[in-house]
Image 1 (cartoon, rainbow, N blue to C red):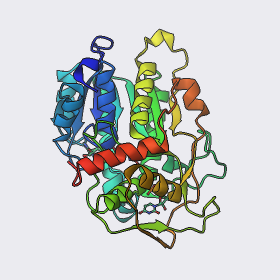
Image 2: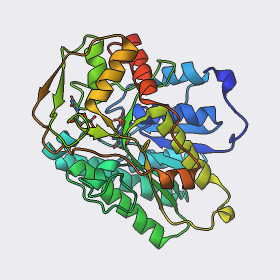
Image 3: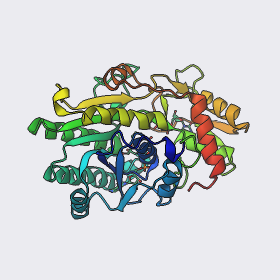
Image 4: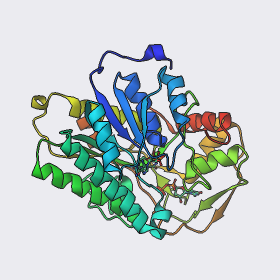
Length: 354
Ligand code: NAD
Ligand code: UDP
């Protein structure tokens, strides 16, 4: 995709503040926003991302997005950004996201994720910006009793990370209840994987990857010896865990669809209740199926050994996507093969990440 493909005119008025916009999902969403003619302004403290992402985004879209290095807890710095730009909506990605780390360091997680969000929402309120899309997670459902998981499944978060997401959801609901002018969309992601098809941006975890796809990619590229498959005695088709993997560009486009919804003239949206929407494909994929798909597209053998189940893991989790399709007029387009192919392009062209 080149700069000439960008629809510059369509939303030229709309400046969108993207917190966490240099991170994995944020950077892909910034590309999708720019390609739809929105003007993203990124704020990120670079605690889990690199400044070089901006050049890569520029390489795809023809223009580097505006960037501020700031921590969300720094209310003063945030205020300055809001005063400098006429922000119409906020997409709030910034947060810490490692489940295991959150169990070890709950205070750090609650402080960063909840206090950071409170600081952001206060500054939004002071500056009369009342439209927000928030990154939540399917992890708030915990071990759901019914699969596929619909949005009315009762939340049962099982760790501080997931609880921080659930608490922020509740805060947003309360803010909306107190002032119905607020337009709130809560997106509950399932398992984002893959990379932009250019191979210029992708997932770049620090240290040993916690998640399956980056681990497989690093084995394929020779950075790690073999994959450990956490258990093959689950009640699934081949005994390995089932998840709903969603291509990160499908996810990014889901945000654009949500933004279109809240950026519409207020009168055209009768019901302004906070929307809680699952973003997934609606299809489950086992660990073994993912390994095989990756081997096929990369031509690399992925050595693995089966070890015991990972503590806290569930057997199967995938989304009911009926509501997302209806409310956002959006659905995923990319297959498991596309996810593996794009992840492999990114990893093989950037073996050490950014
Ligand atoms: P990421 O770590 O790549 O991106 C998050 C960004 O936020 C990073 O660039 C980091 O530097 C920044 N950040 C963190 N705390 C900050 C603070 N206090 N102030 C300013 N910047 C801060 O993560 P991601 O995978 O892109 O996830 C984005 C969001 O989506 C997160 O909120 C995450 O919890 C949520 N989410 C992610 C997944 C997933 O599997 N990746 C699944 C469900 C939900
Ligand atoms: N998994 C695995 N080996 C790894 C990482 C993950 O077997 O090194 C499995 C894990 O047990 C789960 C699936 O892959 O069944 C997805 O795990 P991930 O951590 O990516 O997502 P989550 O469990 O948070 O949904």
